[in-house]
Length: 110
Length: 257
Length: 262
Image (cartoon, rainbow over all chains, first blue to last red; front, side, top):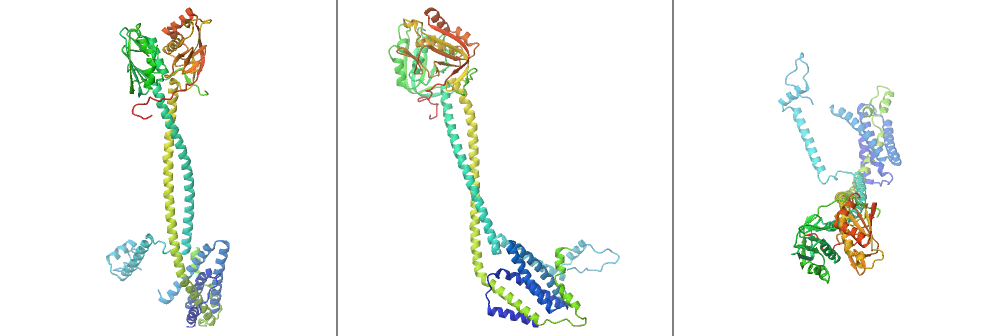
């Protein structure tokens, strides 16, 4: 469906264009990806639960990425960058696990 | 995954305990659940062993991330630096201790040599060295304390370092002579002629000292005494008599000099 | 509830439930629209870029990794070597301390021994009670008989040793086993040192017994005669505290202990 198409298009664009990531952004890219993943899985679960909403998806995606990056940036400035990023990853990881579990229940009735 | 029981439980009976379930499972090894569990556990086991092996091997750094490696490197640097500081401190201590020990041992060696010298002089140690052996025959029994005393003084004057009489009495600072019935008494030891005096020193000088005109030999061999002295020079006079170490009761070391 | 429980329970944004509750019931679930498309595109882009970057950095990071591992191994070996060095130096220090203590202990016992020997030999100055005897030529002495000769002093000293003197000095010359009382010309020498009249003979010993025992000796009697018959000066005084100096010339050049090089 459309969402999957969008994903495919994004991947293709990324492979073709190969844009250079500015240096200041590079340390935040991995955590942004994880935050985005959390939003995506959350959306998928909501879709399977029957309560999906476009606007909420956009807001959750953008806010997740921005907040995660902001927290890590603040941590770097304060000198506890490593610890804060660990904490963010832990929380996002648990949420992803939980959402994936719910998705699995929907898909496999297991 | 729960195991299917072979028989339906009796509603009257209490639910089967975990142990009962385990025993029942062991009795039916080939159920689907068990096989599935077996396969998965085999995978877990295999993976664990591989990981443990990989961790123990020298390539334990393979799985580590850059940040961890850098941290490890830094901690090693710190440890190395601390160890170097420790080594420098210890080497300093060792060097000082070595100097102190060397000087103390040198002092100890000097003290040992001094103890040796004093022992010889005090008569507590046997001695040997070049010197003379004077044999005095006294057929008339006229050789007395005064002559003997004079002889000893002549030997000392000629540099005698150690003196022994009749191979039995060691002469020291406190030695005194007395006339007795059968001969001379030296420090309480009754001696009789012939007397032998062993003296360690320069053999030539000692022999000459006794032989000069009017000296020891002349006096002994004078008609009034009628004795005979034979002086033999030797490169190895052995003086074996010793004195017991004695404590002075009234003379005490004066420290302030 | 606990933190983990909370995170797990609230892993799905509540907004979804909230918005869906606000929507009128009866509507079928909203399908993802154009906004979702854009977001997924962005997501795909991000993931791809991140993936490419990692792949890009892989060779460099592998080299870095290898270099770091080499450095770590080298430094680790260095730390081990240092630790072994520390142990070696500590062992040295331990040995040296033992040697030091032993030398100190031995030194102390030797020191006591040297002191004791020195008193008898004459190598340490001593003090104690005893006798002070002053002898001199007879006043207006004309013949040698009336003068103090070396044999007279020898007899005097012999008598004092016999009476139990522990240390004797003549005019400050300590008598040792190597001391000679000789006459050279008209002067008397003790320890090769010429001594002047009057001759002060100091003897340390038992102050109660020394005078009487001295009087009992033949030498003592001789001197009483010399004094009485020939007029030689003889003054004997008990002293409570005499101080006798140490002797020089106590090194040995010919004598050694058997079986040992000096």
